[in-house]
Image 1 (tube, rainbow, N blue to C red):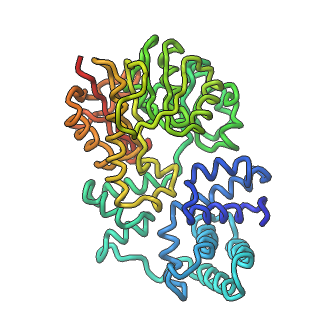
Image 2: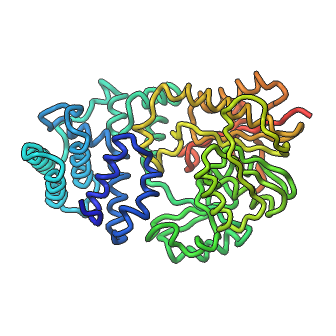
Length: 453
């Protein structure tokens, strides 16, 4: 297989996702130095458009295919189904690509993956779609509104049903529409090295549009980037980090001060660790802890790029119960817990199809364990912040309620006015909840607690 062909590259990644080998973020990152490395910039952009487009609109594409196919979808080999999705996505959503090119390139891919009957099947179905761009019928919203919304907005029906019970049909529609929009690339200016206004000047000539974020005082939103983010001016010099605006608010709610001792308990690749050090003006101490050593190695490299000098790393499994290892106590602790990730569907549309109903209880139990163990490191009177990129009740408010019930020396504090942040209303419990259709950010939840003196 030629790795310079964008359609074949898209097919390879979609097939890997179908096998459950990895998530989209990791696959794209791996192929930046692998599969995509030999591609021209235009071809790489087409490959990405096909990957993200098929994942965003998979249910809509599958409905169309199901009405024209001679066999049920679950009888079609995943590799062949992805070829059909790629071809149909080009015909339905990419007006600049001739329909003949969409059909012919799909047939050529089918020749590499299937027998002659498979090739005839792909050719016949896509040519039928080209002649009939609309399927014979979409689901009737009057007869089955949940199925109609699930197909038209391309979401699993169980998720539509779940959200409709909470938000109602119209707001669920707006939520889905927001999730299906292509989001801006959001950066956080690294004020250890530059200012937001200076960064705006540096980047303004390299993108179609650039603007300040609505809430975060350090955020910049970019639209129409001509190339990878790591090729933008200022990246190599550490002038910014990629971080959604909602995620930027977590460190701002934590509000660390210069000279303090702070624990970033689920540090990952270091987006919030860098922000914490920035808010502390590189004075004090930040311990970035995570259970994955590889992430901490990447974090250390990232801190060097940003010019952060106060961060140390430690491999720590906070799911393990028992007495904490010999470690000093902290003034503030941030727990950005592992979660379903349903709040970041705009950026990771594969999450639509990998999420499962039973995952929420499993994540809830894991989050309570992590939060409980991380809280052991907090000084009396210290601040504990819990954050997840999810909007689901099991992962948000119910985690805080269970934690505060079992850890009675903690009490919640309302997230009020955040210094430098345009005002956002907390909910009736004092939690900060952000939604893409209401705030233009990822879906996010932040809660603030204090340990009793």
